[in-house]
Amino acid sequence: MPANDQPPAYSYLGPAGTFTEAALKQVPEAVGAIWRSVNNVGEALADVVAGRSLAAMIAIENSIDGGVSATQDALANVPGLRIVGEYLVPVNFVLVARPGTRLGDVRVVNAHPVAYAQTRLWLEQALPDHGHLPATSNVAAAAALLPTGDEVGVLADAAIAPPGITEHYPLEVLANDIGDNPNAVTRFVLVGRTSAVPPATGSDKTSIIAELPDDRAGGLLDMLEQFATRGINMSLLQSRPIGDALGRYRFVIDLDGHILDERVADALLGLKRFSPHVIFLGSYPRADQQPVTVSPRYDNEAFVDARDWLRALVAGEDE
Ligand SMILES: O=C(O)C(=O)C[C@]1(C(=O)O)C=C[C@@H](O)C=C1
Image (cartoon, rainbow, N blue to C red; front, top):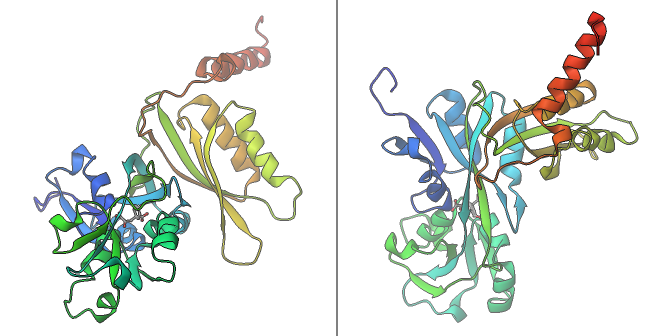
């Protein structure tokens, strides 16, 4: 516990009731801690960097909408952060409105952009001429329907919100299960300040961000080869604009394995030799706890044997 006897704080996208809060509820260490509700990813990470929070829970990937670009860009641009864990939350949505509203009355729908993207087909069918008002979170979208003097929020007629929202706010559900895919899942990561990596568990993931050298044909293939030739599976590869000029991209990559696994360490050394900028975001236990299996050619022993062989050659010892 910190010197002032305050429990540690965790930042999350609020208010209470968001899927981000549901992800934070999966963290045993957060029980009894202070939970800081914030409005966006930048605010959550700034809390961590400034030491106001020990860690922040942020959405990084959705099974329908893909990578959460605000998160990927923030992790590329804010130094001194490490992912320490990942958490999966099944997501589904309801459409809510002020009591008395009928579906036919709805013109403007308040929704977090990632939630909106996951309900687009339903909205096109049920409310073909609706307008979208973006909200900072799913719960904020619903809360803003209630008149509190926030005129922007009151402009919307309905909101896309998590099921259970009516336990927190006096709203009515106009439609249930409006997600376009009933199996949608959002992946969250817990991000703290840079510290030593935790030990490998055998069921780990490593996240990195890498840039390619300019003006070199085959740069992307060179990068992918670093992983392929060491038997490393990638579970995410996404390009994001670096932002300084058209056509310049960085790559957000998730690898199966831990930086302390010989094959992953070796691949990172290979990547570092040609990439102008590699950011190591962390090695952490996989949410699905599935063991990472590799062929014996790529296990730790194979790398250690190969190094011992080389050392013996140099030392002039018998093979
Ligand atoms: O945590 C929430 O409830 C949010 O509103 C955020 C968020 C996100 O940032 O991606 C989280 C999960 C859902 O897939 C949609 C939105």
